[in-house]
Image 1 (cartoon, helix red, strand yellow):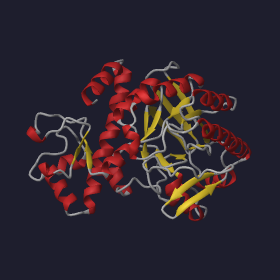
Image 2 (cartoon, one colour):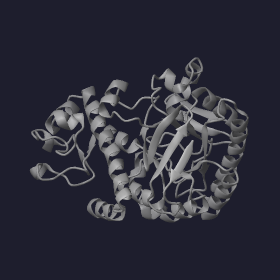
Image 3 (cartoon, helix red, strand yellow):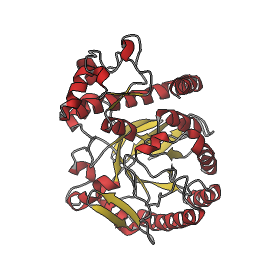
Image 4 (cartoon, helix red, strand yellow):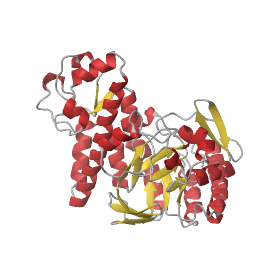
Length: 389
């Protein structure tokens, strides 16, 4: 993998990801949105529907908790994407599921706890690297212990950093000796919670490995609550961590960040995010509306980030979610129809809402890249945050 950026300063920057082994012609622009998947599929959308949603090639986010029980079956195929019939898309494999809150306190010795609906799995570096070799992702994060947030004690932070360092060492050795992974990109996760000294220890350790990129990890324990974290809470930690890392390298931040925080992270120099936010909004019957025009919605228009489609005010609202949106949902269906589908518990409700929310977020990232390209990102960010704070 090759990453090139137009800026090595801590600011909003454009970049390109290219030269992926299985996709030598593909070029992905950053800031990049990874399309969130569960068990290799975009939630609520079949492959055909996802292709109707967007004709572009996207990179998929594959998470360990949603796929770990598939390992035996995947080993019978050439790769994970072949097993789930998504060969057209490159993948990034990450440790925890950003859409679900991770149960705390189950990390022991050199293992990381991965939770599925069947219970928890204690994953060692060897088990993990066996899985990586079976899945053959294009990019993956080395095994780490990200079980920290603002409340984590200094004693536990020390254990997290040391455990993550030991896990990385074992993964790194396997990575260097593996013929299967010799052209696969491995990212290191910078841990340390909100302890700046611990962050320095983790970052210093990883800098010596000459990696292609880093994940800013350990700021939260995933789940919908992440959208409620303000940038003010994480600003010092994020900026300090980024200053410790090689500026020309790729930076990743996973989690269900609110759009406001996402813009601040992009302005800080983070390059890649995941689309768990649109999925979480869909699961709570909310439609993303921050790109909507207001003049056609009358009294029902809510100028916030999202609207709740379950609200009774939409029973007779025969306008689309957004009159400017070009997604198939907005072009063909109304808020009243979606409200009806919700109340009758039709599966089509989640399909149509997921289409709209995913389309909106993908377009949001296009808008962000265009503003960075034009040099108007700072004005765009300020207007957005002023409007939706």
